[in-house]
Image 1 (cartoon, rainbow, N blue to C red):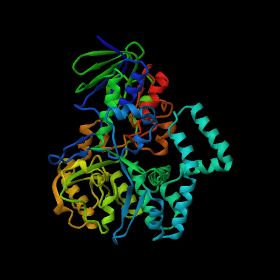
Image 2 (tube, helix red, strand yellow; image 1 turned 30 degrees about the vertical axis):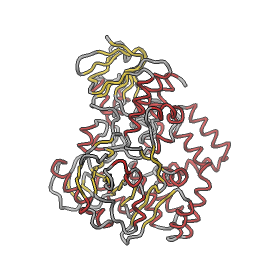
Image 3 (cartoon, rainbow, N blue to C red; image 1 turned 90 degrees about the vertical axis):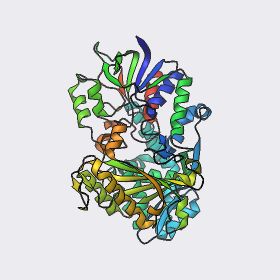
Image 4 (cartoon, one colour; image 1 turned 45 degrees about the vertical axis):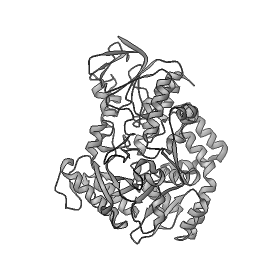
Length: 522
């Protein structure tokens, strides 16, 4: 029987980061992935036509570039092939009258754009930017800390020492605010509010949901201060490098090797059984990078803790997304050609449009006017397409995992096989309102529905690309459930990692790396 110190279920970026650090610390590690390739939702494929490389789901690698894992292992990752494509024109929003706002790394340029719609908002932007280094230190300390009493106390003490009681209370209040509440008290222009609020939709925060102010703030300030990065040649450069570092340290990675169950018969997780019948022993830890609902299939008899098991069953997923991948003759003809330089263009013209799209999807309806994230990776990295050609990455937010109806009353299909192409047509037509002639530029198209996403990766339940809502009742100390934010389960030696656990979604590898450090030090 094969045996390792740690057996990791799933070769997503968190599982791979965990494997790499454990192996670097001298542990023997076996990683078993059900799919035929590692990476989970981070992969780059020729989805439309030869020579056109599309990021299947995740595109923005800024969180990984700035992660603690990359700081620790950057040289190893670079040697294993990690390469970034820096972005200076980061994100923009376009409005029905053809006007637009965008954030670029040149602060004077961004300020000038904002001042064109509101001088007061330009001053507010400058004030936020000036205060960002101090506030970011506290926020990143919190987001990069394990959810344990000692770590939380250390972060709070640091805030109290630096900001005093009133400053600490201001920060706590901010963490509880909805995007709209924070934006309304900070800015006066509807356009500036829409520009930033669109980022909340990436993480399941419609404008009026408490706890969502953090994400528009961080994206706005971080992109202004540091810029954005994509993967050179595709987001899969990150996965290639992680695999290289993990294997270079001695980890074994098997793909096409789904795990059927965890053997915890002796009161502790001591082995996993693969679907091909092999039993792989784990001397120190079994680490499952799975969505909570998948844990029940790995432990048919449960964990023995009814409260924990109930929390796993009740874990809430965010609405889904639909992905549209386009191979193009040229970038969209936006009203201002300058928009062609941006990595992201949000088609999310107002907070109220975002509210309706979120409410429709949450009710099981195809939104009449969805929020669309238009990714233009070849504006930054032309190597992803043949010379003179481009790829477009359309993320349609939000979309229901199960369709109960169409908010516009035009699409009859009630399953994604029937509805995905008509709904994709709606999304492309919506982008075309702002960029006339887009359809004529399309060489090939590939639509990936929420159910397609889940079939490809069971962690993306209902097309939920963030593997679980980040609302306050399911974040921080409550991710995935209260009492389990330190990645432990009630089963001895069985741990969880991945986006469903703290610190949540994104490609920062925080969950896998913090767990590995907890287990092996370093």
